[in-house]
Length: 442
Image (cartoon, rainbow, N blue to C red; front, top):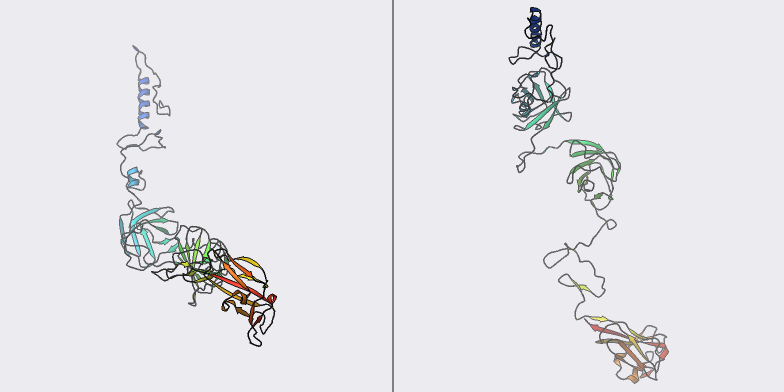
């Protein structure tokens, strides 16, 4: 045979090569034509006469202008793949809950991994089955569970993948934005056991969760995204801790009772805010011990709205005015530091700083008893303002923007004997003290 196994034809039969001016024998010619016949018998022809007997390597080249596949054993082209030939099922029949799909080309058996997509003709009302190419009926499931009413919606696209037992369904059509809901949203309910930091609420197949156990929850696993929410229906006395990544309504730990509903809102994927609806209907109470305040002014009372008291300004003489501001009232006397000569000392001149910053406009002047005498008890006061001359009071005083000055004479003050009233008599100087309380006008 003159084919070398690599596709090259060699003329090497008996009597070859022939020599010029030499008779070609029938033996040489017949050998040559036999070789050609053998080579042609191994060739492929454009009319399809011959069938390959081995794999055909194309050496990096491609088949071009290949016809569209129509049978399961036909070669697929890029066009066939783009057009979904064999996986897109245009013919959808049966009923909303018992679907039939007519695949083209038809399949002869179900095989794990087979996938088909179709546009639903009706909305299902209960669990759904499918039969493809007239084969046996198989259940359609979502995440391993039978479908419920409304899982398939008319005119939406779906993909079915065979898992060896049933077809698992995925919805290809995304919910349309801006539409008005005309029916209820029915969420699936799941069950999750409480755990300190690993309560699998985000992996549950439902937004509403029966939350079992009595664990003390100090954190949750990371949420799929900020804004995600889960509703926990507590079965027992689990404790939600107000600390770290968890902020609990009322700014305090909440010990749940059976039936309490706790909404978990992901502020970020790792921080959570919990609001509580107690089963007995009572509110979540905030106590003085747990109240947390901050310097937020947006809710202060003003001339246009009710609100909270403004933060105190730590000035004892200030009051809140009618415009919601702290200020010292005008026309109010404010006392300075009292000038006190204790005890009364004759022939003395002493200055006492009053701290008002201005000259006082009024002074409260009196003698206060230190040792009982003449019917006066300790602590009794005699107003000096009743006297008009220094010879009666025993002293005079001066005032300026800084000091009150007390100047005493050589004699003690005089007063009416309280025990036996009859004219004035001298007091014992050391039994009394002078007190002058200065005031300024705001």
